[in-house]
Length: 119
Image (spheres, rainbow, N blue to C red):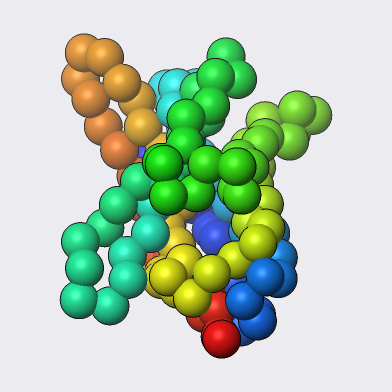
């Protein structure tokens, strides 16, 4: 079992920045991908960014060049999402996700943190 706790959300003006943190605990040996997803009101949850255990990153086109996903190299159990040049359309609940990809796929979700970008 893996537990994920997000923090760092809040209210920011357009053009501003926020950094989200996700602290993972539990049976982390099985996790090989962590990421951030987001869900805006009335919309489906969508991928924002992922990072593999090897450090490979992936970004959705909507956030590429503005968001950066990273890990705490010492702790290995904390993932960050640095969000710059925020836009009102970035307003959403942001969820941390942890996956074990491959045979016996499994995934875990955090409770989410609200990000609101005002005009």
